[in-house]
Image (cartoon, rainbow, N blue to C red; front, side):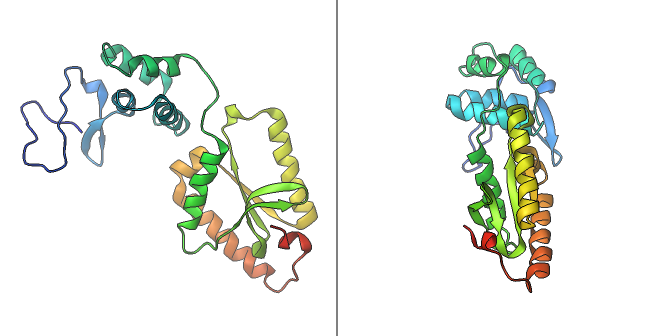
Length: 220
């Protein structure tokens, strides 16, 4: 929250007023025409109250969704990091390049919440066993699978090849279509992702409604 100089924030319930002597124009952006702190500055403020793991995940999500960059975080640390309790931890996370710490389970959980939150999408089978592979989300009635993909820089070439082989096998052995979504898509294009899944499940379910199910489609 940004308060202009001279405002006291009195009479506003459940609002805690914080003042800063280091807030500059470079640390301010606008959201829905309201002045707010920039993502990089918000990370620095969050660092003062967050657990290291919470801060790490917040930074990783900001980098993955491109709302923030390492350069912007370094700049805000130089401007306003002196004496801040969380600045050393944030600086350590930014300085040493490492793979993203967001796990597949976190991404899968976010995607699961999106799917179950849409009344137009029937509940999928989770971690279904199909032709020697495990599918993240499976709709037997539609012969359709959705997979969560980790970050590009977090994936090895062997993992990439294994995933593509999985897609080919499911298509060839079970006529199963596979869609893959990554962290940036489920965060920045959530509506498009949900719409894609809903349309695929509906369309493929209609096509397969009259067909007898194979044993693979009964697997769960």
